[in-house]
Image 1 (cartoon, rainbow, N blue to C red):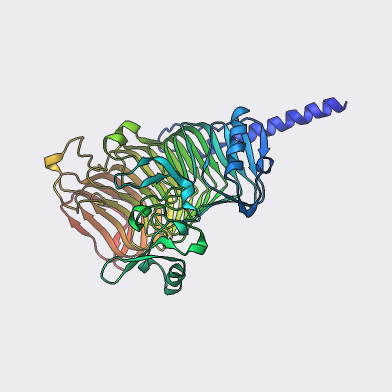
Image 2 (image 1 turned 90 degrees about the vertical axis):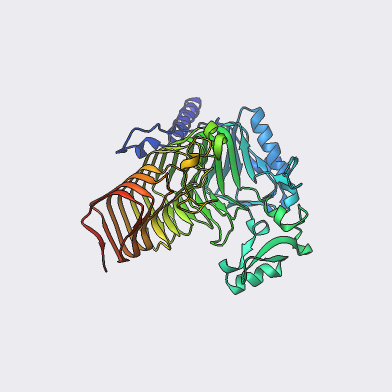
Length: 497
């Protein structure tokens, strides 16, 4: 009888595990504007070890790099499984995940990456300026079935890596930086930039380059997963990356669910998520406040981006972005193209720009079936909806006709739909800056309501735009330059307040 009870309990446990692994992701793929390939659940072998079994101490002082490596190697020999990180503060150098492994952070677990930058320097891959590359703090490459889950935290301690511009912080924050040591260089006539180079010796953070500029270029990402398949990031909190927080690149079947990302608003290049050339992805239930772009779609630069394939079949839903340069962003590099992207049921509160599309010649690509709907925005510093074709190297209006070929990689912003979008408070309702010979074209705005804006429509080099059932109320009327076929079929377009 006892054996029967044990067998029954084991079966129930397996059933629960299987149900949880399925995760019910199909619930998000309803009422879509077009068919999309859906994500599949990531399956991890049912085998578990705990980090403390491999000599780790969660006291925040003992370096646990070797313990993480031993635990992952052990799981690899067993065919994979779950590495449990218990409550505590676990100081470590770089971590490399392997196939069929779930790094599970229990509630109260903080994986704190050591500020000793020497731990991350790669032994090879010398850059042109003589400096080295650094490993991402947590990385994986050419893997299948990997996961980072739980309610714990990955802390990148980015303050020891990032430069800080004086205009982005208050006097007290600036003085705190100066108290750490470092180097200050001019950044314009009246502004300065602080580099964490030559920090005070008691901090124990040695330099890894010959000067602050070279060292700045060596900043690593917090989580970087490349050339992999079946990746799940769920529930964890990502803090204070030296550079971007979450960078999945050339990944097939990606799920990011319930992730919380935080860094100071002044964090240089402090992007939250930057998936690039990813095929089939779901980003849901995430909460972001960061120093640069929030949820940012990338697609590679030039021919390498084309070879990596388009960013396609992306569903972004139920996400909240507070401070960021853009809530949802494409660019600046997307030479591989963007295909079947849906952004819906999201809120952007306090971002510089709400929906931000930015690129430039040499970095651009094509777009097909980009659909943004049921989005609420408020307190937007600049534009609610924004397109720019001269973001990196060229200003607007530069002729593209003389180099209109595949090698030029001009941004082709087209085939976007913006539907059921509400914004209260913005500098500009819709700002579009295309290029001569390469206008932004074929955009549909339907039931878009933008209130309390300073400027209405600011359109340059745009064609075939349709505004249907829109309400845009602004203090200043619209401005258009070299635009063709702009159809206004709105209820209350550009009404003066």
